[in-house]
Image (cartoon, rainbow, N blue to C red; front, top):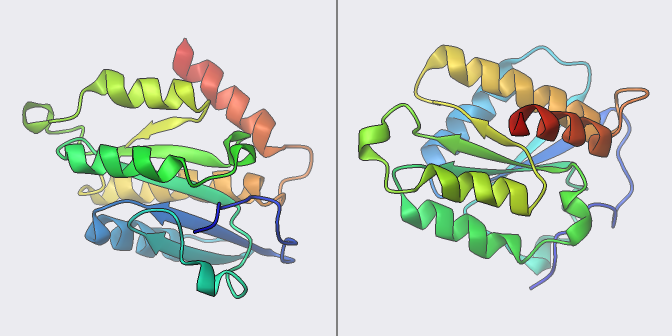
Amino acid sequence: MSLVKPFDKLPTLNAATILLVGTDESQQQQLAEAILKEKKTFKINIHVATSLPLPAERDHIRPRIDLIAFMINMQSKHSLRNVEASLSHMDANFFLGKVCFLITGVGRMNHCSVEMNAVRKLGNLYCSPVLFCELDSEGIRVATAQRLLRMLQICAGHMPGVSALFFSSLMKSSIDE
């Protein structure tokens, strides 16, 4: 069992890696496909996992992870508990702009089993942006993919003059207001 660390490997030229962590594999797949369909100027590696830690035996072939998106389904307390348990397997440096929380299932508030305050508190506790999205809708899925792609581009260092920490602090300020 090893910690996921943001700076333990060298970056790859014109490439970036995103890790989607969540219990709903179909939503992970839909989001990954939407990200891959978007126009981009760099190569994207998308890895999916149901939880952390990642298997240590494959660590030597795993690329550097530039952004981790934790997916929490508002209809599943298991989804929230899974993310909370996974957070302990991460190096603290990831929370310097390389983590976000994707909250799905918000459109069906009468079926929610996770409290909105719990996910907001999670974002505040880990100083990470919380993005609300409804991946069942094609338009919102495309918009979410575009947003993640922009964040990934920044986290991988492909945007001159903008760091992941600076970008994260800008997003954090807009959420708090």
